Length: 92
Image (cartoon, rainbow, N blue to C red; front, side):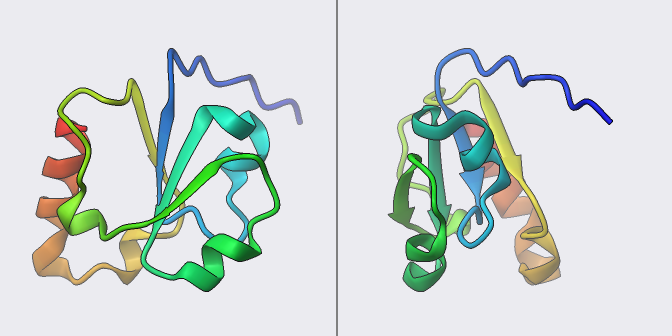
């Protein structure tokens, strides 16, 4: 199976991208990864910029990213917080 490349525009924000960080592996230093767990960020072996940050309270200026990704993260977010994460991701 061939996975097409992601047209990333400028930088990609990857929410909860510690650990495996698939997007970080694919796009390297074009990715800004945020995760609550510092250890998970340190575990990721790629060239992405890794920042300890809460997806419910992202500290980026509006329209900082053309693409926002997240793999397996939202299942760990409290249902009452999911809308907040989406609003913040849309703003980013």
